[in-house]
Image 1: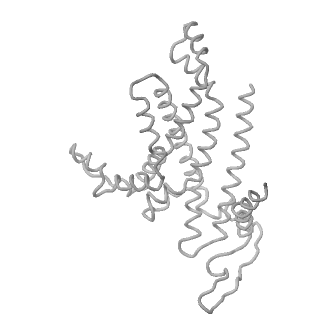
Image 2: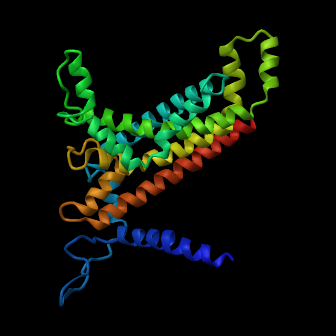
Image 3: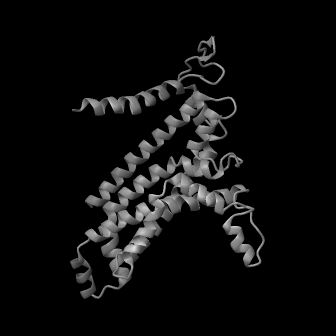
Length: 292
């Protein structure tokens, strides 16, 4: 019964991962890998170079790595903080009794239900500098049109905004489930002790949500760190490279210009190592706080 699952994992996970590790230890690129064009076959001529690629990247010889890493961290922290904060705020509002609460919940979950590439293309149309609805709105108020996707800073703000819009529903649903699991007796006891709404939120709601928020933050960091589709689909090739995070930069190394397969594989393994280290440290720190 376990064999089919093991085979699927081996084919879809272990083999690509192992092959990626192997390629990162070579100098494989578009000019020295094996290829067949019609009757012509060119054998592979790439060499095993050991850890040279990792040293090249981590030592700073690759001038693109550390700027991309800093932006990737800023991108991840900004998106996760906004997603969790806004998701929690909406969850607290929707946890109260109100008219049309089911309708509001359905509308706020909609960005999560829509395939992400459709949502990104919709935002791309709205941010279009010539025909986008954003420029239509600001020109209606007498303000000049803006090139929303034309400068590095505007591109960074745009990708963060779109990714937050996509990620809020998941955070809202997760936190809403956590709110409904907190015993109402705790709120009643705090209210009888004279606690203000803010004190009840800080001393009852936040501790009660800790198991949920810890998991949501961890998942959000992993997903956002690897969020390829938002940046690539929103900007395409209309970018100076300043908006590329590590994963999109690795993609461009592998599939643009003279494809550097070894360099892209090296970036992929470094990304994996960074996320594994972060996940291990984060889980240990959150387990200690939960036990305390």
